[in-house]
Amino acid sequence: MARGLTIGEFAQLTHLSVRTLRRYHESGLIEPAAVDPFSGYRYYTADQIPTAQVVHRLRQLEVPLSDVAKILATEDTSERAGLVGEHLRRLEAELDRTRAAVVSLRHLLRSDEGLPNVELRSVPATTVAAVEGVVDHDEVLSWYAEAMAELDAAVAGRPSLGPPGGRYANDLFTGGRGAVLVHRPVADPPTRGRVTPVVLPPAELAVTVHFGPHDDIDVTYGRLGAWVVDHALAVDGPVHETYLVGPRDDPDPGSWRTEVGWPVFRLAAD
Image 1: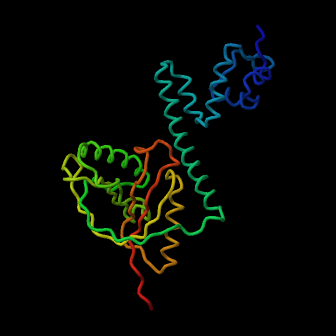
Image 2: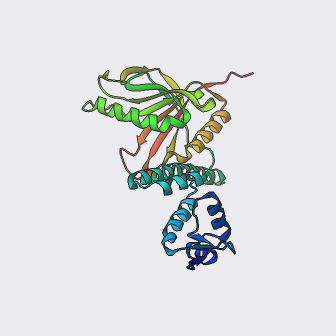
Image 3: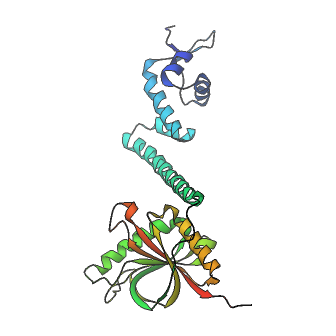
């Protein structure tokens, strides 16, 4: 029989270990071109190197073996690209979560950051154009993007009376699902699709500013909460966020500014 590349040579060329190549043979993922019937030695061809390299890259990206097999078995290039793209989107989402956690942890570990600058503010009742819904915590970002785009379209051409904002019910954080309202303060708020005029009630707020993207806004929430406790106040109602500067204003995340306001009332003395 014609001698091809031994399993050791093939492992060296593809950076897949001999043990891994044996496992891939057993699973049918990468079968050798020939197996010596007497010695059991596996032999591969140079034509199999690109396939092995694709498998190696997919496994580096933590694509499950079952999905790797589907990708290799798919001859349609667009379908194959779709399968790979779907996994890459999942991986990118996981990387975003990891990055956000790293940023948040770094801020938490900085000993030079104490309590934030907080302002107690009385906010009057305001009529705004708003979209409301009950949302799962994991879907807030996508819901927000869709709702804000709908708001922007509905209020186009109307004078703005202030920056956009949101209201987030406590249940969203404590139970993973809760009421969310995003709004644009504009003159003569319209009714269009999900957009309706809403009167936001007056509130007493403890307000601080979060600087930068929202990857670590939980740290700002926590420090604001510590300030509230330290000043013998209690939280009463949904969290208020006001987007002073955001992606629509400046693509640089370092310039973004978000006011976080907790409705509060003073605890009665014992």
